[in-house]
Image (cartoon, rainbow, N blue to C red; front, top):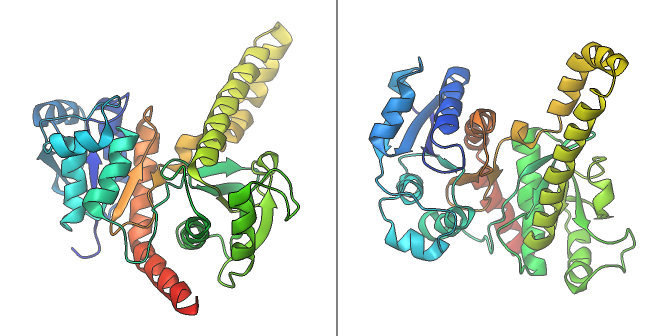
Length: 339
């Protein structure tokens, strides 16, 4: 029993709930024998969706929640008022230690606010950052922060770098990950006040592999494994990534249909092209963990399909198995002692 990882999944959150959420959950249960899932939401709706699947029912339970927090609702008010919502009840399962992680494609604001208020920050963590994996030429990089702290201080960015390094090394398997801070040039003297003040602090950290500044154009080339920035910049980078990726895929597909010759060529290259484009699909990398909490909270895209939900649930297992929360706390404690 102790070897199982128990994940609470918000069955009602996101544009494609509950269908894609439940499909992804079933796929995760089939793929991971050590996974248990609590589907949180309206019981009748969940049962109706589950009826079309064969799945290991001994590893799935339904936790009833009668309310749903909508995207347009003020996050803090929604968390306070909708106590029986799928987000609040799911976060509560993590807080109470019933589940190891919570996954939601629902309201970003409610998940971020609820994660900090209900689950709480780990000891020593100043600000929990939202950290998605983004595709690069060399595999994937961790973009930290992309949505939780638009007004960060230098000490926050230093902690982001430490947390991101721990995540990349232990969950993704990148040894001695390269850390860079987003800037408008490679020179140390460039940047705004936040970057200029943070740069020497990162440079002085002996426990991270800081390589200096990175310009946005160099992120897709994989020059850094951990890309550090405050959430305003990070969110712009993430949204541009998504938009450019989707546009390129559409343009490539349209270009292949322009003539009979191009269509024949498309048939020949389709398998290789499909595999290449798959590597640049953000859904393949799972959701974005809110690092630095007492428990794991992961936010997936509002438009998440089954593949992202599946990968996110499996990602939660690696997070627990590698004791990421414990390693983050120990790293921050050691840094405070040195400071």
